[in-house]
Amino acid sequence: MAIEWDRIGQVAFDRHVEALLYRMYDGKAIAVNGRGGDQGIDVRVSTDAGLRIFQLKYHPDGFPGSYRGRRTAIKKSFLRATQHDPVEWTLVVPCTLTASERVFVDKLAAGRTVKVSVMDRPALDDAFAVHASLEATFTRDQAREAARDFGREQALLVDGDDLIQRVRALGNRADNIDPNWTWDFQRRGDTVIQTLRAQHALAHEVSPVRLSLKTRPEAMDAGLTAAFTRALGYGIAEEVELPPEVVASLTVDGPEWLSNTVSDVRVIWQPAPDAVRSDTAAEVEFLDSEGMTTGRYAGRLIAHRSGDLGASVEADIHGARLQMLVPFDRRTEGTVRYSFDLNGREPAEAMRVLRLYQRILSGGSLRISVDGTGVGSGKLSTRGTDEDNAEVEKLLSYLSDLEVVQRHCESYFPAPLAYSGAERIDLRIARLLIEGRCVADRLARTVTITLNGLDSPVLRTVLGPQPQCLRFGGIGFEVTIGSHTLDIGSVYLFHSRAIADNGEQTIAALETGRAAGTEVVFRPQGGEHFRLYLADAPNDSRPLVPVPLGLPGYTDPS
Image 1 (tube, rainbow, N blue to C red):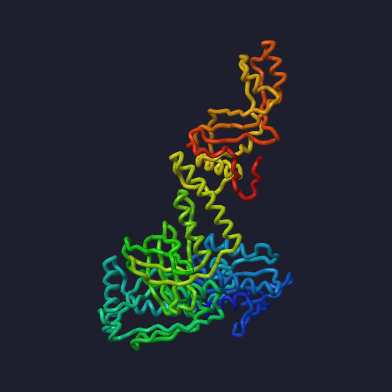
Image 2: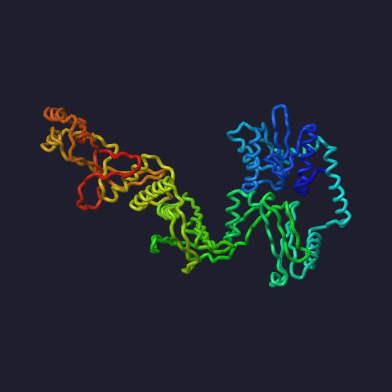
């Protein structure tokens, strides 16, 4: 009979593994009593290669990414263990690791010389098979339990109806335990889940049930402490897992058959979600020092709750999630959590999301209302660093330029969040041209034309030694952003002081009738660049003087 790892419990699991390691290493394995703090060591083995440390974690259902507390505890145990300079650190668990869990363990050794390994359920089963006598010692009690079960349940389950009748009968027995409360139950594999249910609407008044949870704050990391505060202090419907090392005790106070105090237990806090109408409006309003509104963002309410410390409001603002915690104590600053994803958003929508984020980074006073009624107000501390604010401004500038160009071209698509330096420069140039401004073309230092051979006084003046005002039209201007190309229309390329590099030679060719096919290179005086302006831009009578692009790190051409 194999050891039933998912049923034996933490204490038995530790005994089984400690005995196994003692047998595997000929008595050299030393189990560390954790009453004084195990310092990251459950079992230590001194080998010829150096110290080997085994960390035992009784997680029958593993430690998936959703169980952040478990992963945090494993990592903390590993970091404490590395202070002893082991050559190998081994995690021992009673489950079969998933690919994600194995990747998590493997990454612990990144950048370190210590070897990291896992002894999971298949490895434990294999090791006990090698030491069969040891396995037999631990499975005797399981055999006795199976024999007792056989004596109780000799009847065979004939079909599915028989199973349903047996379960229903067991449920009726549970209902008869107490007139106010009963157990609903379900089986998932080898796990039986019990749910306490009121048998009538006044059960909580006639026979109240209270839960008292005592924790070990010193065993909670910052992330778990924050999650615990949000859930119990402000009523956030957020699942919080408290691992056994954090739970000092859990007491159920109610009917005699139900009352109990347990320890060495994992507690999952999972509040029931509130029923909120999908059309319930929520609005967050930002205020200046005199209480005047400086910004207002409307959205949809997700939840409105309260806890021991204050109230909480969660809202959807333009597809981003805003969570505001408002303390009852007005002397305490409120907090805001804001999560968003700009992928797949068009520029205008992405800008609204980012501007709200910018407001939150800046801090200050704000209030929030639900269906037009104020439900909370507070003051936020400044959160953003100079680097954070600069990054937001940079992205807002890009989105603003793209929104103007998209609107001009009537071509709308989600904003690409990755772009090259050249794409960014061309996008800013396109926006300025659309707004009727003149800019220096970063690439046009010269313009080359080919003559058809016809002569004229105007052409000879242009080819002469004096700078001339030249304009070249019919040139399309396109901007490429990611996989999208935007054509803003025709532009004029011009300069008021352009000179032909080979003007004298070209005039000589005209006089001999051999000018056809001659290429003439025009260059602005003083090493400047040719200028651009949009052909159909409205004439606002402003001089065509190039404006700077205003992009950080970009030097405007002369």
